[in-house]
Image (cartoon, rainbow, N blue to C red):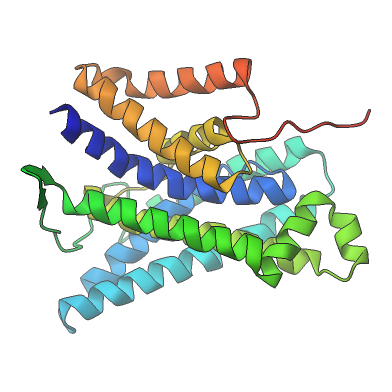
Length: 297
């Protein structure tokens, strides 16, 4: 039972890790806590639901699933870039609190817009992704969804690490993160680099929405709120701005939740998660893998 709970924790922790990667990328480049990030997952889930229910009567199931995945990831990436261009870019030189308030406003805008769309409404929708058969490993039955979540998350972290460290776009992202004005003087298109960062982070949210729908098979207007907050805690725990830190933080939060549930204290899961956030901010605000930032005053 304990091993099964740990596997369940790694499954949910993998989803938190994917969302935390998006938080860390955006914060690392423009120091913005994008609290609308969780609601981009909600949008991706509804894109999956709409695509699957529309396509399944006309095309084979594998084709419908593939198209739904591609549309979800692309739709989330486009939404992320649009939000950055329309809401965050005009306030880039404003006080940081203005960006934070705007992010919260965008979050509520996405939630309420989803409810006002007639064919969506406030009720949850079942997302008909196919079920994945469990796998027997050494006499232990492991959920196929758990294997999918862990594998996809690990692959995303490897690809993202390669992108940031080895590609020209990744070098531009790191340069803008260090000093945007100096990067501009060196010929780097800062606006394009920031938009690219939002596109990648939002695409990760789209992948997270697909894994969530495979695991929990439903979409609702408020599904991204708590998911986004837990991913934020994971990013802070691992060290916000650190890609490996986001991965480790997400997995740890998932495992902690599973152990709390195993102790028959499932109603305390959210409380324990936010207690971890408070403890990290008090003891080591830079997180496990983050670097302390010194600022001249």
